[in-house]
Length: 178
Picture 1 (cartoon, rainbow, N blue to C red):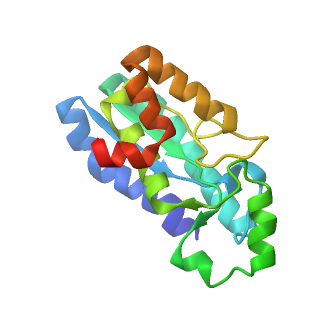
Picture 2: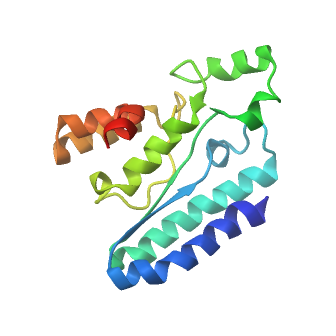
């Protein structure tokens, strides 16, 4: 678990950083998990949570290290995402219990996570680096990140206009029009 999540993230970063430094531009978006913030999640144990927390620490450190080279490093922390992997492990009762804790009242979908990654990798997020805790939690939970996503959209509204902010709130539309 640690090799795939943390070392894989580090090795990918090491592979692309020389090119990004040479062009004095780049954006890295790492995948963490709400499990890193909560100390556990729906399926992952302490080892998974620790690996995803390591990704958050690495993201923040890399953002500070690479910022002077105009390379941005952020992470997103999805909550429960409906995928082929989770579908076979989920009873109707367990799904209902999980969804009850999500403000949007449903699991997230892969294309919605992709929309967050696309936004952070785009020029719309050109002044954002080091995000990775409460700031970027697709789907959010009442105690972690739901208001921060709105604040992020408000910041984009100020920087790039209302149309761009609307895309932050509707990642599906951003993928269709972006």
